[in-house]
Length: 143
Image (cartoon, rainbow, N blue to C red; front, side, top):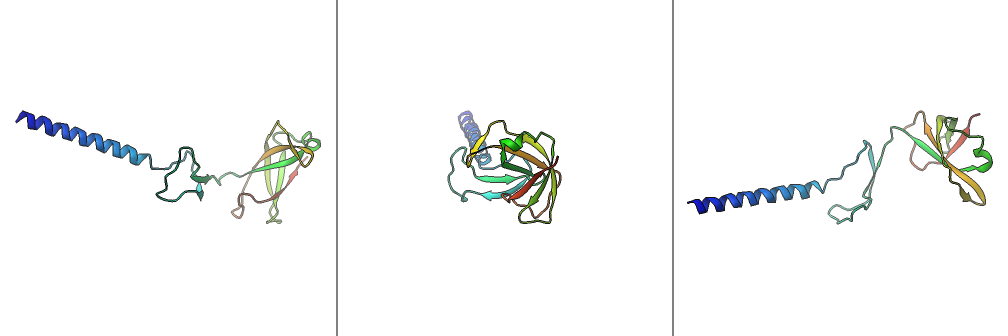
């Protein structure tokens, strides 16, 4: 019967559309990142509803370390330039000395305890598996 055939074909098309919609909804449940890295923090509970643009996961790229110092004063900053060599000594690892290079010096200042300071970004040449985010380091700018 042509009417039964048309109805069955309509049902198949409807089922295919529902499958496509379900697959699309499923794909929206996956979290992905544009970088290769390590998940260091998960900030949601499985099954919890989350808002758009809500941070859910922190992913770290430990292949290259960067140190930022925000206490370079106006008197010191004039003697520092991009490409300068730097020695880093972590407070927790006083026998560890790492070398790095000044990668950026912010143009905008900040007032910190009455001093004019500039944030300086230093890219380390090597790493150590004992390093952790947030560790305090001594920064020695080489002349």
